[in-house]
Image 1 (tube, helix red, strand yellow):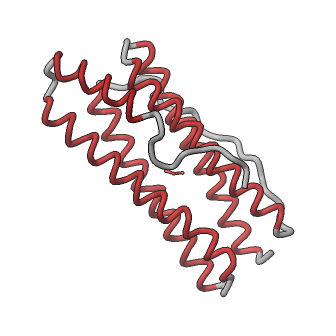
Image 2 (cartoon, helix red, strand yellow):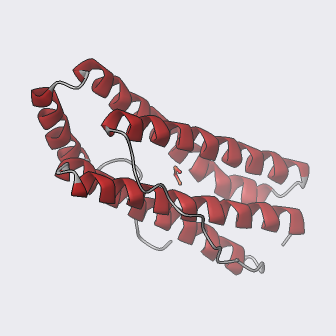
Length: 172
Ligand code: OFO
């Protein structure tokens, strides 16, 4: 496997692992604050991010590279409120999208069209995730801290977690 591509894919493994931990931190915070719908949504999303990481690991190994299982940084322990959670989530997803775009660039520079094709799945996934984060954040801004609104929001997020976008995890 092309070493530049392999190294960029391994960097992405680390980012997906960090994403999974980040969502786990938000899930745990939501659970301990009585936001069970949000917690369910975040736990499920953490699993999806782990699936993204596994998909990369399998791809690297199956193409003759060596996947590196990374050490991930400490995820946040506290969040100010739900709006802050989703603001951080959107900022995080925007950074991940940049990283995927960078990966696409490296594939093209190295003329690795097989990996380029593989990475397109992540391009679409990031589009969906950013759009979802923006929609949720818009809703939260409309609610503007209203208690009844927050209750409905949390309940809606619980139903959104069943059968939502980017469903995990079957090994391909
Ligand atoms: Fe891995 O999809 Fe977002 O971060």
